[in-house]
Length: 436
Ligand SMILES: *Cc1c(COP(=O)(O)O)cnc(C)c1O
Figure 1: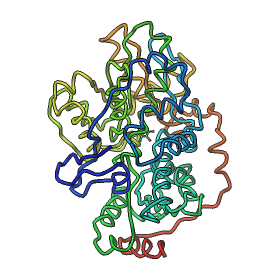
Figure 2: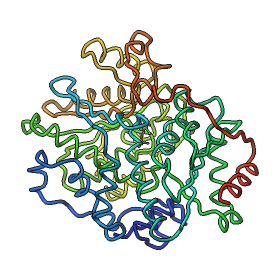
Figure 3: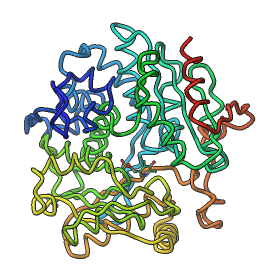
């Protein structure tokens, strides 16, 4: 399978090269040259298939010869070693819980898959060693640290803003050691991101350190998120009674929802997508007005979605032929305030004894709003993070009832190791020293 750049200048590349390069040299996102529908019989019998077979069938065409089938299967076995349950909320809505992985946010699946693909490439071919450089405002860093931990041939450098990530998030970044290095930046998330961007453009560094990123721009982080929709369908199929299936996805950079749209292109019977956002409403506004206006991000309690310029939206446009009406036919969007989010958390707890985190709560609000105008559909919203990760902003009476999961308990007492930096030159010096 070849990938082309959505800016249409850079040459087409293999899966392997797209994973190693990340963003195309013309700054475009990579997109697969073809998407081949799966057999209808596959969906008719999906409930009899195990998750590894389903995931393998969904992703194999996008990898082609670059990873042998036997190895791809073992990578998937390794990546998908935790449950992804569908939990019923009421007669028309269920929650797909994506937070049972090692760092308790949905980014685990993509980060673990990408890490193992890169690990395979460095082990069997060139480059022999690669440095993954990422800036994080919280969740990405933890998932990347855990996903890439102890993978041979890969060094990971994570920049995070000092004092601006939660305690749990900081522990997830700074206590692993081995090939994971955390740089604590005196500044904001934007400062971290600026430094990372500068490093990728640094010609002098380019010759000395093989760098790649690990955000959802990378196809190996983006594509495996398709699996969620297949796993949800497998679990919900019997309950549908021929009702059309709609997914509601709390979105920031729109990687997760766009992966769902890929699953639909593969033939998965999904009728419609709904995006729920916080006040960062670039996409819902576009769906209402037709104007796509990016803006600076506003901070909210669902902070993993504080994105004013969603990077994956260009992939959604590509999927629907850059046609506004076609996009509208497949996607609806709603945006909510922090107050509405908290209200929804209270409502779910009081009426269904269900504890949602702020992101999942927005997914719930969006599916409910959609169903108001579309009765007789069945809605699944994605619950993207464990509520414990957001306990500081959750209502106290609810957060105190959350049982602390082992993934979080295991962080207690671990020693924090970070290196404090302030300027780009310190990052550069660190990267050069780190590859020696
Ligand atoms: C990253 C993240 C999102 C947003 O996902 P996108 O793919 O960027 O749209 C939503 N919820 C949580 C908890 C996240 O960590």
